Length: 119
Length: 115
Image 1 (cartoon, chains in turn red, blue):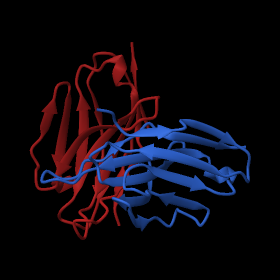
Image 2: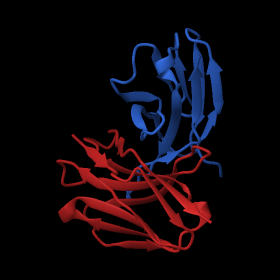
Image 3: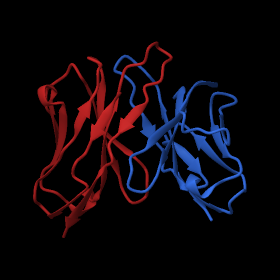
Image 4: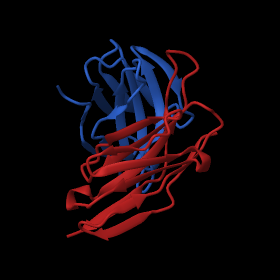
């Protein structure tokens, strides 16, 4: 069975500080995808990144960066020079590949980390 | 281009009443999903459509829940005889699987409060 753990329930940092959100996952499959979503107060889940299990390269997108460590089953997310607009709940999620081309790639989510950026 | 659209955004209903939510996916997406999210939790999978075919249902989807996607475009999620435990946000998502994989895009959700 799949499982995603986000041990940090809430984090508060002062604006312009860097912050890292932790994500640890469990799966029996060798092929899988990892995701991060942002959920602002409006409720919409905003897609941030999808990472294939075979691609362990770290990724940087502007102030966002992701560190994928297969050896520790972790997929951590860092925001550099945080801004008030980064305040939201962030979810890490895992999907396993479908059995067929029509199969469901349903997501298993963690419980989320509420990030508050203090001006 | 618009994202995944859901309505109504908020619904307050009395226990025992029926409610229906609508989802309009991103136009070229053939896959559609429903998830449910309660306070302080991550979304949980409810059901999945490939075009108009409902291919998977979670055991969370009791007999009071029914979802349809009649023409492979929009979808509806109906909850009959609502109970207080149904209070949650119902999220719709859509995707299109291509050579790069399957990225799932979510709508803003429909909040349900059963009183």
